[in-house]
Amino acid sequence: MIDVMDLFLLILYIGLIILVVVSIIFVIRATRTLKKVEKVVDEVDAKVSKLDGIFDILDTATDALTLISDKVINGITNGITKIFNKKKKGEDDE
Image 1 (cartoon, helix red, strand yellow):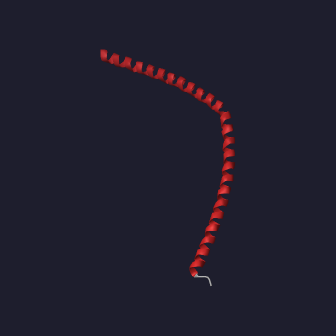
Image 2: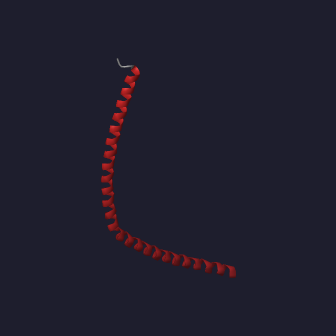
Image 3: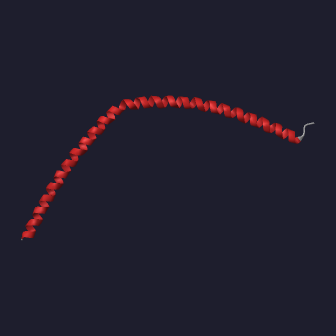
């Protein structure tokens, strides 16, 4: 007759064997999934690298527009400052 302790050990060993088999299956599926993800990432990277030139052109254009607008705003600010400084000098002279 089988002892209770031997029965529990048998159940434990069977459970561990099932756990190892399920873990191996999970690792194999995870590896396949990671390979698919890697392919997708490579495709996206290739498509993004094609757009880098366009993004560089847009970056240069926005930098130029920012420079022009800064110059215009600086000129307007200097003009307004000169007008107010002339009024203050006129008031100080009187």
